[in-house]
Length: 410
Image 1 (cartoon, rainbow, N blue to C red):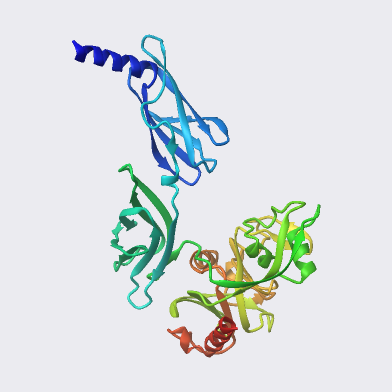
Image 2 (cartoon, rainbow, N blue to C red):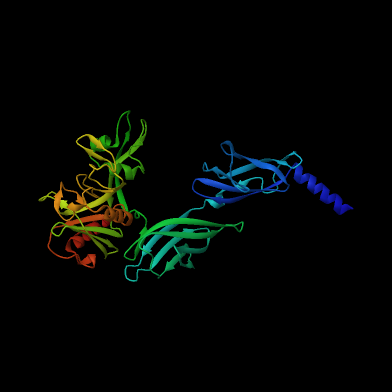
């Protein structure tokens, strides 16, 4: 009799105060997905409200017992659920944790991807407090090795060319598993991040500027004698057009150090070579400037644009326009006069035709954009010779490396 009364009491308690079990299903960079399980026969889907540090929000139904809401960088949420049973009675309450802690799902994962230039093995160094269960690149399973700082993810198997997907599966404290995805890119066996990493750099900040109404970044950079890319990088501006009156900008210059990827352009042979960790990866045909329009020297890739617009003597020419000669990608040099870009006239590749920029087939410049790091050095030479297999055999690179060493010392 006591057992029956206890069950009846539990049933009444669940119906009245705690008739839903709520748990976190997944957390992405922008969304949180909740699983809401009713302990009764619902006549309609429950309504899920959430009390957050900034007030109440409503979760949107995303599937069977699944509800999602946009994450406003919340560290916690309190679920409040209302439903109706088959007797048309309002049922509310949860029996799970009153406060759902989102911090467990938001721990940082610091990932560095590297390809061994000799064996072409892929090595991913992961610094995280999470427990990594498994990892794979496309269909290739990676070895997971625990270290004092995190994990090493390694495979000696060759990856498929061009775009790859790295999926890391981690285990949370509640026993659930979560997948974290990264886009990679492989060129001739060398794998890096899709659209490259960021080359190490040093900054020289010498002032600040408060943006005035109507000012654009180019005007501000020109006023202080720096490049727009300097201001973008120093102030972490994803979109240079999104500055506003009253915004305070740090003014300074950026100097890149030696990174993993290097581009070499030979004006005499109309060829461009890309290197990774000093090893030759691939050679591309290019169109170069007329006469000495592209001077030999050392440049850096300061900006990379997809489907760039063209500004020609004050005229705006939209992306993908037939008269926009920049093609599908534009890699801006540290000297703003020059860059590497695609073309709407593929028949001109291999000729001396440009005003100083390096032109490539659109497919080739998209490959270059996907592989090289932002801040990669571009060494422009003018000699009738083949590209060496090892970058260290190029005298211009040796001189560049010695200069970089002096920069680090000073």
